Image (cartoon, rainbow, N blue to C red; front, side):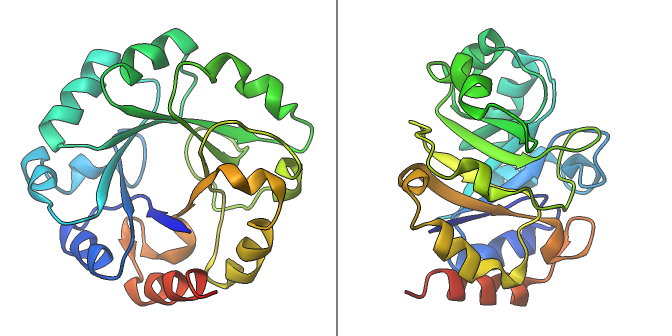
Length: 212
């Protein structure tokens, strides 16, 4: 199972994550976020990151031209759209770079209806917890609402995943919906402070998750 660690602000920690086998690191390009990466490092430093880890840019209701410029400036591999982007806006971006559309889910959502207009215009989905505002809440949503669904597109599972969730994730991976599970997305539950991770916790999590 692949792992994405989001909200990175320290480039040395990104290199450490690469060494322990994390496949994706997320940089938040939303100025209102406490993990807004440009408060900490310039685009040139992000672009210098090499290795096997894939750089993901997280955007909220940003202009497409600004997103595509950031993709080039930072050498991003994926774009994650976490706002209220329309299918047409998503399509413009996904024609240039692999694009993930995030959805914040509640217990009562008709998920297949919610994602249907985006099926043909993005490459992947991400399912997160519904909350006030945009971005991570640190709260887990009820993964049960996904069980049995046919998502028909690779998806990231997010929303308050914590260090001791590996057994629950392995159980979830046995459900039919998990044929489309692409990666799990972790953030605040692995932090020391905003944007600074507890790398040892992540290492333990990755090791446990990938042990059959």
